[in-house]
Length: 163
Image: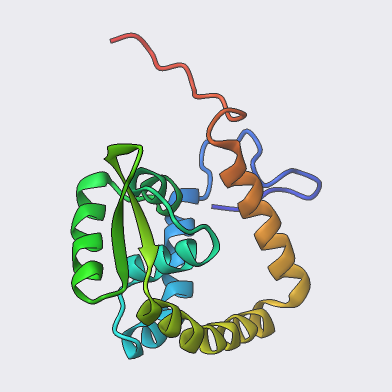
């Protein structure tokens, strides 16, 4: 299928559009594949690394907050946190004023792991930026930040036909 004609916007009234969810998934896989060897070297999964990065900047957090930020379903997070606790990467603490609530903290072991991994992660980001270009990298962050900040509110849903 031919692309847009000169002067037309890429998302014109054509019946066919690029599959944005698929492109985003493929881009995610391309990027995360560059970080997996680093995470494997330190013995953590992608999910565990996401939690550690979030806790490093926003500690402590309740499990529901981790679910919201890291995009986990609650049952999945329960298993991931249990494994991380067994590995001495996190510790849970009941909230004194409300024993139903739990806070998740990093441990000294996980702090040391993050400190050791960050230089390699940073170097990998530099490699990605070298390939994509500094300007395009900033633009990519801007677009992704705008998309995630919408929380669906600014993009209306199409009206579905009646059944």
